[in-house]
Every structure is written in C-alpha cells, then in structure tokens.
Image 1 (cartoon, rainbow, N blue to C red):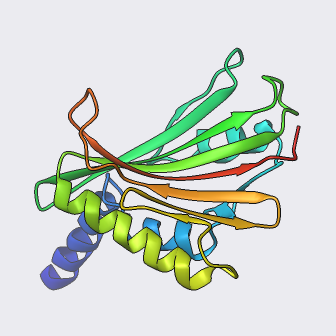
Image 2: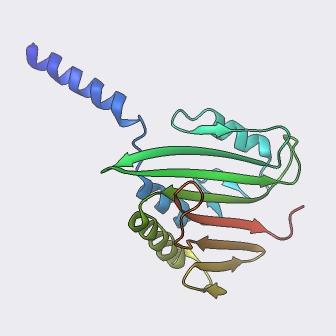
Length: 180
C-alpha cells in the first residue's frame, strides 16, 4: 500500500513539473523545420489573424501578446535546461488589425544568452530545412540561408551578435510577396 502511495505521488509530481517550462527546444526546432511553410502545423501564410489569437491565447505554457491596434502579435515560452535559458517565440505580421486580417509573414525565433546553443539551433534549422525543401537555397551566406518555394520566401538567420537585452537570436521568417 505504501508503495502505491509513493508511486502515485511520484507520478503526480512528474506530471505537474513536466509541463512547467520544460519544453524541448530541439523538438520545436525540428517541428518548425520539417514543414517550413507552416509553424507547428497551425500557423500559415494567409490564415486569419483570429485563428492565431485562438491558438496561442489558450496554450498554458505560452505567454500571448495580443493587440487590437498593432499589425503584429506574438507568443513566447521559455525553458531552462542545464542552466541555459532558451525562449522560443512566434510573431505574426498581418495585413490589418481586424480579426479577418490575413497573416502576410511570420517568424519563429529562439533567444538565448548562450552562443553555442544559438549556433546549434541555427545549424539544426538549416540542416533540417535543407533536407525538406524541394529547391536549393537562392541565397546563402555565413549569417543566413534563404529558400523560395513558389511565391514564399523562407529565411533562416543568425548574425552571432547579442541584441540589446544580451541575447543571441536565431530566426526563421516566412513571407509571401503576393498576399495582400
């Protein structure tokens, strides 16, 4: 009987602490890069802004930054693994501020104070996207790689410099030159 109580307590503790800021950023990188025209199979170019709001405003481990007056909205979550903090975020850019406003572009980004982690995220994004794209990159430098597929551009970038908050940022941007 005591064994069952200990096991039940351990399982409950594991369930409660597993979701508390413990996402695996490598899994997120893979999910984003395996299907680079979408994000998490839920965000895509041309989608209504209201769908983004509905998806990310209810997720328990994400902080949603919505706005009815800005053309951008974003959501973020943070995890600390082995004393390295990684903030994963997504930001959309819409045609207008209405609920029906279409998403014209969106970025996924990863922020960290650890340069080696940022380099690893960048390399993983580029390698995974490279293996999933139909075409070769149209532009490739030491700081960014860009692909086009039909009317969509996909850019992965990391400049190796800290921002004003002391973070290295790796991002993947998707935009459509035709949607308006």
